[in-house]
Image (cartoon, rainbow over all chains, first blue to last red; front, side):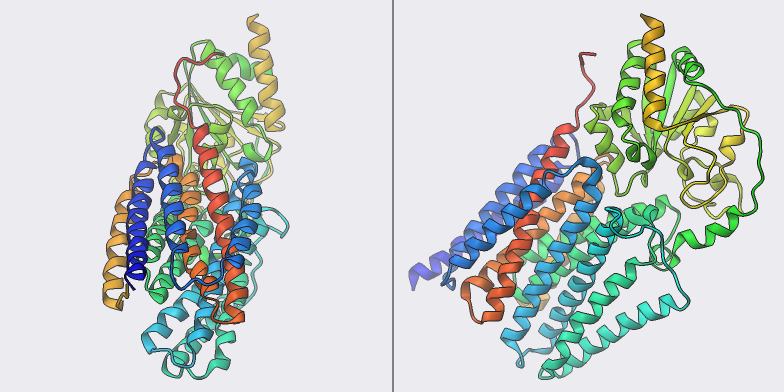
Length: 464
Length: 98
């Protein structure tokens, strides 16, 4: 008896320490200097909590646990080694795995306890499996779209929101019946199945550029479902970890929505691509000025302050290493080069920073929108690579523009603007960008990687 | 140790406040590693799955629980690995060899 009580206490203590380590882990992540300590703290906390759990006296069979841990590690290692460009889909996939775990545990708990489930317990259990199930399929869909296994284009149809909300309402209705009558066990599979369908339907109308918001939102759901699981299992550790994850996802979702000047509901029910297509119809051919790599190199080397604005197009063209060479070549000549990064550049929050850090660009040169915008009036050259809508001055001036009100990088305030772009085709949303027709703007037509490479050759060739 | 719903709600509320305050301070620079790290931490749900499988109260619990352990463990291993890989790449500009 005393031994059993001691084990119970040891487990509680490991959980307590793990909780503290988790909070410290996130705290250390606030600065790149201490961030790696954050990972170590997280790992230590996790190891401690898992080891403590294995002491649980109710455990009679360790074989399956060992198999699960080994298999999970085998799957986890390649997922930890994916290319940095694939991080968004990896993240979406891991939200799906987390949600799967929560849903399966919730399902098992229901069948172990039913039909004698107290109302409150049934309520949190329903919350757990509904959130878990919709996050599971939703995240799989998001991962599929990001990996381009599925088509990225938003698919919309009449009455879509009605269908989606209807599905969700039915699932909640079933949950309510189960809370009152937990003996109606045949209803439980529907309470899982309907949110699974809802998860798919929820992502169908979402386009590529909305992914940062959606991934953040799914992150938040995954956290909340884990917290609900904590209530079911009466585990403070799980409630806290879920709350931290939920809070993180929520903050990121709000950031992303603000950066696109859209509300949550608008992202989920808006299907952005649709309304834009009509706007693009009314455009006419206007003259633009273009320049060659030689001319661009000349202007860049003559500048004293350059801001590079990268977008997802840079990542698609795999141009980040060439951009680093450009950064090196210009820095060597005494040019001050910085990067201005829009919050929704890339396919998930902070994605662009990771890609540039991978290319060895020092992080103190990577500035967020609020930090860099004041610098543009004193900037000689703003070089836009693979970004479009986030530099569109119409968002600031043109009240009729579909992106009016969206915060942008004020590249048009620089003395000279250079835009590397494949052709004059419209951007993701099909919105005309007046930036391209300004007198101070030079269009550099070509593939980002090749064009930047050609500029670098000009600069270093001309110098030696 | 049993936990009643009200105590659970207090724990949840306080943790959410701490989460907001701590995570608000994370620079946008590190938002991708933030998401992969919180995802790995969230996989602490594995402890629930371990107990479920270990107690082995039903065949269903054993099967679903084992799949749950696999899913959560892959998040733990993959999540910490990729977070560390990303953070290793963030270097300050100092005396760099061109």
